Length: 367
Image 1: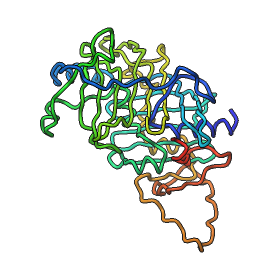
Image 2 (image 1 turned 90 degrees about the vertical axis):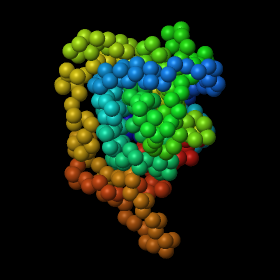
Image 3 (image 1 turned 30 degrees about the vertical axis):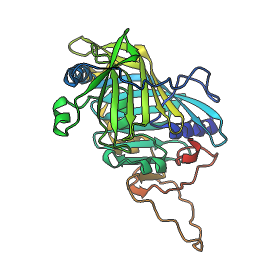
Image 4 (image 1 turned 180 degrees about the vertical axis):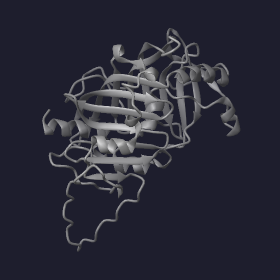
């Protein structure tokens, strides 16, 4: 893989992280791919929220350790207005409720790594830029997303996969949220009506709600939406090709979506995670494949480095120098992976040589 193609793939990832798309290919997006029409009108009041939450969360509780080979692809609009398409191979690793590791690369070389634990999220860029970004879930905001090129965090991506639990009915009652579900005849799972369940989105860039379109019999979601307080869709996913995996210990079967398409309507960017069905497994009994180190930011800095900078996303942007100030000499690569966290993300980062790679890519490219 050439440095130019590596940089192009990294630019695609940064342009689309947290949004979502279709299967494979490069360059112009294939015909027939893209977001489907969203269901808009709930037609009838559905079953009680508590009953839907119970079956959904029972399924989520069984999906605590998932490992799979994955093909991750991206679609976005570049600065010239052209629809672009890129793809990389890697792994999808998840430990409930919030630990994730999504690697993207080619020919066995990791180019970009997205991950999270219970309190933080991060992104590693291993192109020529050699930079790592880290922030805290509760401090992610719309402005943060614009500065670092991330419309969503890995935590939100996990919610969009339909694998993380819903709010319990008792928790909604404490915050005086209406315990309401609806039945939609627009989206169907297994030939039956889909229940729409809504809960607060009490984190991140949007203070709105999560909506899940759930088969009440199986607890499987066909679609997940993040909407703002005005009811506008900020992010949404379409989940399909459910594949059964056998749980370690009990031998019971639980199904996971082998195809997860995530869309960011504001920019038209999208991201698709296609899991290889034969490789999907419950990793509870497989320490060889699912190691705690893949969810440990400090260990990943050493393993994937060295990096020229480890950037604290939550730090205040550095002020721009006055026009009369002397130019600052370019940074030199760190001599070892032992890089300290603390560099703030600037509002207008320089792009690496070759014109691509997470710097991150200018927000204006994702329109």
